[in-house]
Length: 133
Image 1 (cartoon, helix red, strand yellow):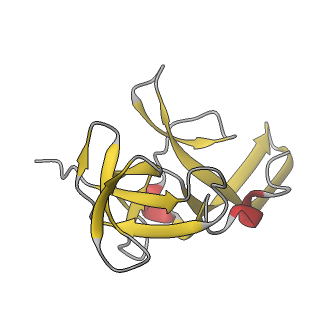
Image 2 (spheres, rainbow, N blue to C red):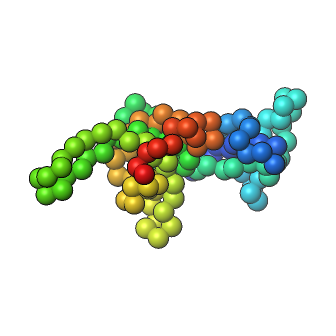
């Protein structure tokens, strides 16, 4: 059976670049139960929800929507210009294919076991700058 769980980026509602990541949050009606700055729990819609994909990286860490993963990119143009390099991708839901994908790779996320979670889109956006341009 697939585990359905969420984490939330809790922000002030106007500036999504400042906030805290909260794991294992309860979710209802696009709100999450979060721990406020004063230590109390409250329901808030000032969150960006991220669903657990059901996948794990090569180190056994859970992969969530919005995570940034490092994976080996292999390019082979029929035996010419062959090379390999590590690239960073954001994990996102691909509605047309009904599966998780690596944004920018235009393919489903089938290499989870070879990938490594190195951050997420809210706490580490700099990890995506310059990749797969």
